[in-house]
Length: 193
Ligand code: ADP
Ligand code: 5GP
Image (cartoon, rainbow, N blue to C red; front, side, top):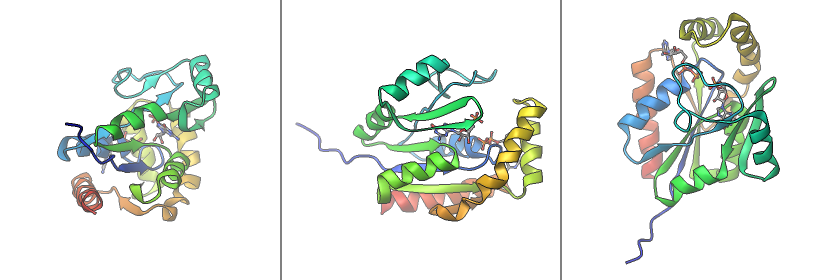
């Protein structure tokens, strides 16, 4: 018998770097059944704790450029100078066809582009840090970037924070447990609609 599965919905997490997207998304993937992570492509180098094809598809600049030319991205951005990130159409379609819901961790511009593309099938969540100072503290505490890169990311954060009210939901990530519980409630309500 051919199963007529409904296509999955889309849940987008966007925020300045260090706000806690990755942390929240990892918890939600464990707690909400039927979610699958959209693995983005990037031209940056992997961090010590990252695995290819799990955290990102790590590509060379040339490989990334070829995929742009072949129109393989749903969206892509040069999020930081010289570093590109993009959502692969093939990955999103593969997940949706199984009926699973797709969860994204993308920058604010990419998040709004995905929301625009999918409309009511997508829920766009902006993760708001308590302050820019706290953002700096978290980025430094993560110890994955040099001080120079941390400052570059902070410099971009002020501008990114001004995008918050264009999202469907603003989720303040102050106390992590509270933010996880709120995100879980919001997502479950959206998936049941
Ligand atoms: P992003 O994916 O948005 O760049 P991460 O999830 O990597 O952010 O979080 C940045 C750092 O802040 C990590 O070290 C993470 O453990 C920490 N962190 C995340 N949420 C909180 C929170 N609510 N309170 C304190 N630290 C947090
Ligand atoms: P990081 O280097 O810390 O993993 O990610 C840097 C920024 O790039 C984060 O804001 C992250 O959400 C964003 N990002 C990751 N994947 C994508 C993507 O596919 N598209 C866009 N536009 N941004 C992405």
